[in-house]
Image (cartoon, rainbow, N blue to C red; front, side):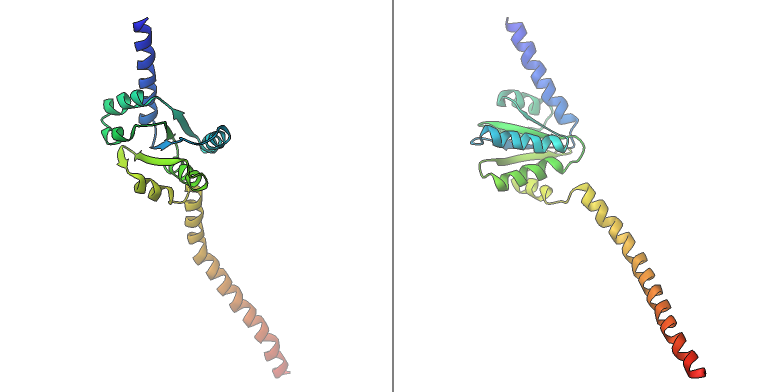
Length: 174
C-alpha cells in the first residue's frame, strides 16, 4: 500500500513539474474565501485563454519546485494555493488573475515565474499590465498604416484642391 501511495504522490509531483516546464509563465494565487460560483468563473476565464489552472497540495508543489531549482516561491506555499500555467501567452495568466483580483478582493496573487525568473507580487502586476498579444499587434499594424494613410489623405486633398481651382481658371479665361 505504501508503494502505491508513493507512486501516486510522485506522479502528482511529475505532473506539476511538467506543467511548470511547459509553461511560459506561472502565477501562484491564494483562492481562500472564494465561493464555488466565483471559482468556476475564474476557471472559465483561464480556460478561455488556454491557461491551465490547478489546485495542488502545498507539499507536492514544494517537491516539484525544489526539484526544478525554483526555490524562491517555497516560503509562499502556505494556505490554499492554486497555480495558473500559461502555456501559450506568457501574459494571460497574470492578466486574468490580476483582473479577477480587482473584482474579487478575496483572490490574492502571491508570486509567479516568467520563463524561469521569479516574479514577486509587483512584478506579476507589471506583467499583467502589458496588453494582450492581439492588442500589441493591432497597435503595430496601426503604426504601419498611419504614414500610408496620411500620405493618401494628402494626395487626395491636393487632387481635390486642383479640381476646385481648375473650373475657376476656365471661367476667367472665357
